[in-house]
Image (cartoon, rainbow, N blue to C red):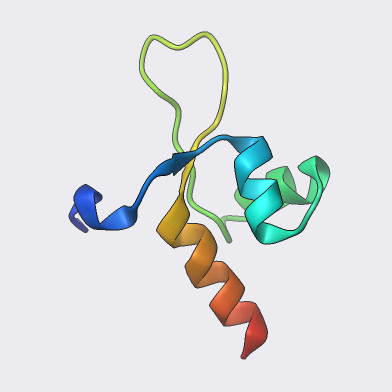
Length: 64
């Protein structure tokens, strides 16, 4: 398991969409397809979070 400290900050869907340059629908599609890893915070009523490093890695993969 990768050290979580090296994954950077946590992003909500709005922050992730801004970084990825996509809309909300595309963001959730990336998660549903397993392209982007996500998680939910225990005891939170709603919301999906992603790590900044995962978004950056996805951007780099798309450039290549």
